[in-house]
Image (cartoon, rainbow, N blue to C red; front, side, top):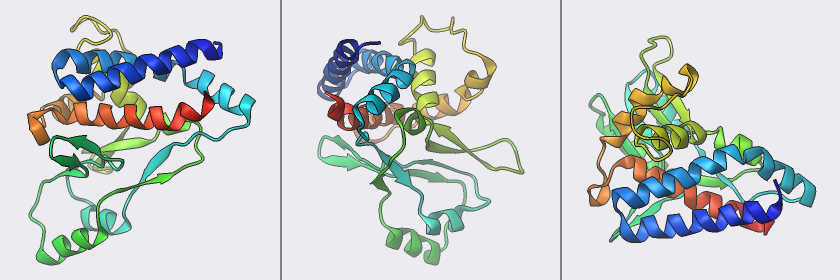
Length: 218
């Protein structure tokens, strides 16, 4: 894959990202989702281009707070860090949490003191970055009560479940990927700022981070 085609896909993603921010409707988010799906298939080409140019991508990863992990260990919860933040009308969306138990005043204080989730620069390749977890959910495995879903899986499953890449209902993904569907569907039912599904905010954050991190290659 040549650099001209990668740059074309960059411009395409940029257009759909700006369109989704502006229009904020189901069609614009489906178009953004499909455009992002292409980037999961270009990951090796992005890594090869960065290596060839001797460049490190300007990507950032979420750092999990030790205090949060200690407090929530063994609990059932949903956590969508959105550490880079997504700007919504009048508000910036970060750190969406749903915890299936009451927190003590001391725990609430510790979580407050820990502050919002932080996005820190990483030396990861594009492939490694896509494979990093960004969504924590309660697992059905009691020995491992928390399941972490990566950017790549979230992009692929949102695109396929909602019909962005295939007509809804005829997705042929293998079992290793579609086993995440119940968790992604659950996230899609969570409405956050502006009344939009949390999946939309996660797509916007990932798209924003791709555009910022890969721009150095051009």
